[in-house]
Image (cartoon, rainbow, N blue to C red; front, side):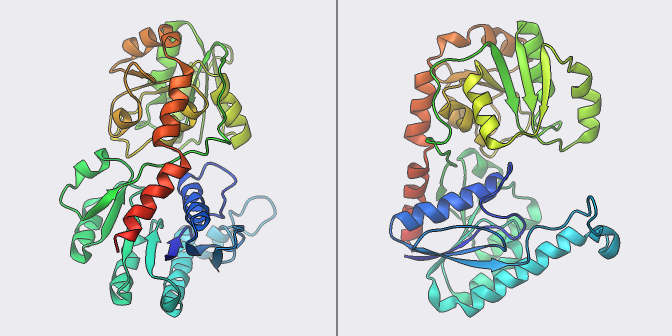
Length: 353
């Protein structure tokens, strides 16, 4: 197949930090190229994707400048909506290239969060068009998907429940690089939370459970809600039992996964997937989580971790975590959440057209 993969207009690929969507788009491009497909990969200027079957179509001039240090403060010059407007400019360049290069691809696989703008053009191009639902669907977007009968690829079966009447081509689970997130048969005596710091992710319950269980905990990630962090998380960090890590590079993250006796994930919202869970499990680390959204599709209760409903239950299961075999955690990822599995499923869906 000749596939146009729309990667990112806001972040360089492969990403340097915690940018899950861009990393998955990168895996799509290389994985499908490895299977012999010809890929037009749309990405931000400065991206670096090397494969004989991949041709990069770059847009923009690199990631938005933040105005830190000695740089010009572009948000002062151009307004607080500068980054959004810049992303729209880059998106317009994607549209122009899709039109100009329409004879060089047969199907479009979209990962961009500006999917709404793409739909009318995709219809005019008369090309099979698939959008991967990396983000939740709000009502106005759902109506647009209905209008254009957009073929959607959900990242879990649970994700479809919010809008069951949309046109789902199928479900493709996200994947983890099992070579990079290597297995560790042993662990140290700490539990771990890594991820967004905000009320919906609820890391406070993870801290309270660790305190009740009397076990050391490391917590880190990107602070999405500063007020929540300052009021609910920071007061519980004592620097001894509960230690704050901030954001870490992927190499450090892998070592933390490998050393953890359990990964705690007391999310309160309907998770569309939960990439950190399979990253932890790939390293052999069991998961203790609240069963919201896609979590039960990932975590087999009693086999690779535990599904619980309260801080008290989470604390109790921390004490039982050594009954879970780390080898079973790794095996589940290899069977259901490897890059090979993900690419095979994408290929099947795309071939239907």
